[in-house]
Amino acid sequence: MMIATKPAKAQYTESEAAEVLGISVEKLRNLVREHILNGEEEGGVLPYASYQPSDLLVLRFLTSSGVSATASY
Image (cartoon, rainbow, N blue to C red; front, side, top):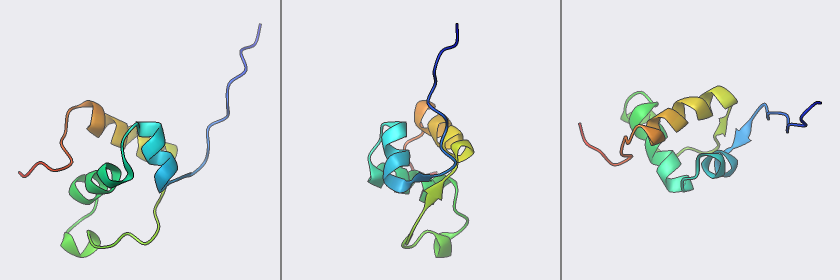
């Protein structure tokens, strides 16, 4: 017996990624700025962001490990 599964998407929009992760778009943006982008010059306005399934895996790890999107280190 085969179980039908929904095929994984190749790319997710910012709002789709936030929905998959169960967080707000703003929290997603904060996670990306604080933990993925290098330096403040990249942390400005993000005109358009798309995410691959591997990106969501990393972001899910950050959200499930209790990392705060507003933590200061």
